[in-house]
Amino acid sequence: AQSVTQLGSHVSVSEGALVLLRCNYSSSVPPYLFWYVQYPNQGLQLLLKYTSAATLVKGINGFEAEFKKSETSFHLTKPSAHMSDAAEYFCAVRDNTGNQFYFGTGTSLTVIP
Amino acid sequence: DSGVTQTPKHLITATGQRVTLRCSPRSGDLSVYWYQQSLDQGLQFLIQYYNGEERAKGNILERFSAQQFPDLHSELNLSSLELGDSALYFCASSVGRLGTEAFFGQGTRLTVV
Image 1 (cartoon, chains in turn red, yellow):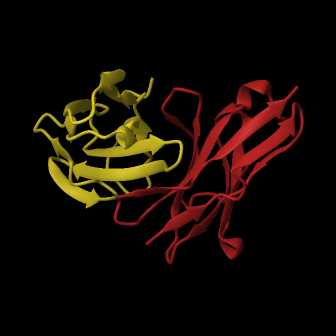
Image 2 (image 1 turned 90 degrees about the vertical axis):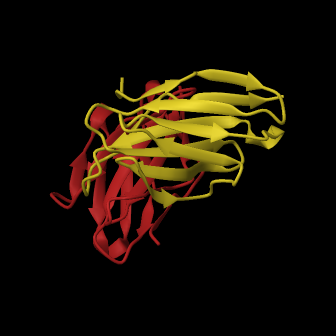
């Protein structure tokens, strides 16, 4: 079965600092990978997705992620954190049958003014 | 707005009762997924339907059941409710093709008292 591991359940950064949220996946075949963001009392919103077209994927709100097969990683970054980035972030992998999405346990991002 | 509609938004009920949560997927999406999100368990996959048929099952209790109707809307039935069933229940939909993302509804917050 496929899975993702998000290192760090809580990350704090200062406003304007680099955001780095880590995600490692477990898959025996090239995966489809996603990052979602969840604001309080809301559903999950897609930030970006990797579907093998390009290893560096740009998403909404200035976020991007790089697929590194050798490291089985798909870390999410943003050069400069904004207060509005404070939220829960989930990494997910979709299996190749087109069925399930496997979500990580989430990383709560706090932005310090 | 993701295009996925969940009703009701909030539900308060007593232990032992039965409730039904409803989900209308995005237009054209054939797959519907149900997730439970609680503070201690994170985002748990419950069940997936594709074009009316059950496609995958996750950590869904026997007290819970779901179905997808011919018009593709889905219902999640929770019975013999316990305090521990209090959680956010999300529905997501997807077209079902490889590499495509899931779109989440705003969730139903269930409180069992």
